[in-house]
Image 1 (cartoon, rainbow, N blue to C red):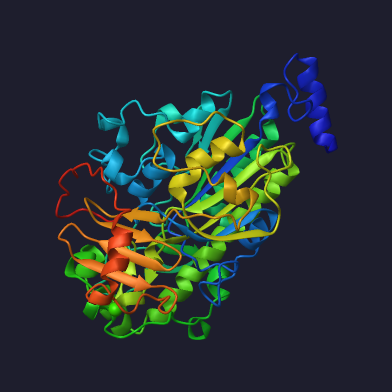
Image 2 (cartoon, rainbow, N blue to C red; image 1 turned 30 degrees about the horizontal axis):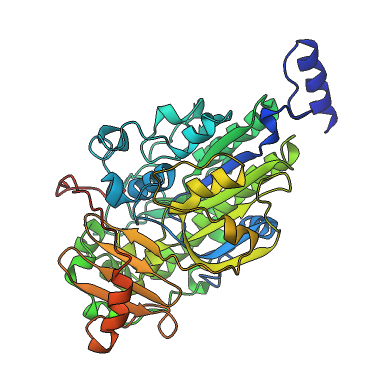
Length: 479
Ligand SMILES: [Ca+2]
């Protein structure tokens, strides 16, 4: 405890309040949770090696503090569906929350989930104070939080504005797909403000264990970050993803349908000579995120809670930057589904996690709800679709035969096992990829009858409950 904390403690003690960070009470014996949700971060990180030029020193340091899951997948490839699944512990096909719309796709509006106890609420019911800074739910759930903070958005920087000076100037792209350097400092951006609020809140202290959600917005579009980050990635020096021309020739038509596709985004970018600059802009945005993560971890480490806090970092889904001639998320392919997931847990947790450990088993962030409950010693909650990753946190090589299931709208499911990705769409079209021989998913084997048994074995994992999807408006944004 530094002198400032000591003095604060003295003052608080004199006022008869609980002294932050001193003697944990009975309720405080449970570890705190720092729950970090990253927006649109794929595996282009140092520790996951998804891109050779990625620079994420703080994320890599966080991975070294706990367990890095090298094969973690999101339950759905768009923000609202994925976050709702993680925070309710229910698949899209169980909740009926398949896509983005504040009015029509909020789980509280659906009878089956109107009274559902969310992950933060489960902690709240067991003596935790719950807080959120930034975007954790895609559309917030006030019942889940005791305290919330939203930074004030800056017009044209955190939203989409073709008139912004950083606008890339390329005609024909979807409005959201924009990038460019800002002549602003880190402090001007909402992610800095979100982390700064979290830091101040940690410094003020708690008199009960806390569950703090921190939502970091970058590398979500638009890729507007301060110029210094762009200077780290000269476009001519960054590698492009490895891509097979005409990769889509063996893919069913139903696999893609959104504004990015209808705008022929890949063709527009290639013809504008902008593929390298777009990749560089995404990498710059990732390193901006990584700096905010470093800022947050430094605040935790300077607080009274450094040694008694479980840290979870996850991304809501991945992103394509030209793989399969596609840009964005919202598809059931590896680049849109494979995500970073890191869990650290101190000695005081019910399941401590060995620093520097890695787990290569296929897991889903659907499992975070039961996992965090177990790691923190809370009673399990029934009726969830996921299971605790506790056995893997104790032994990353433990037997694990659960696939990761990702769902995109009604009755489109993708089953990922250690060897296979099998996708079955609502119109019965299929994809099958062998990740042992084809890690980039170039060759769809679904039409080859020699794999009928493989497909049949994987199809047994398809969810049996499939709630109908509320009809989607034609002009639906892919936010
Ligand atoms: Ca292909």
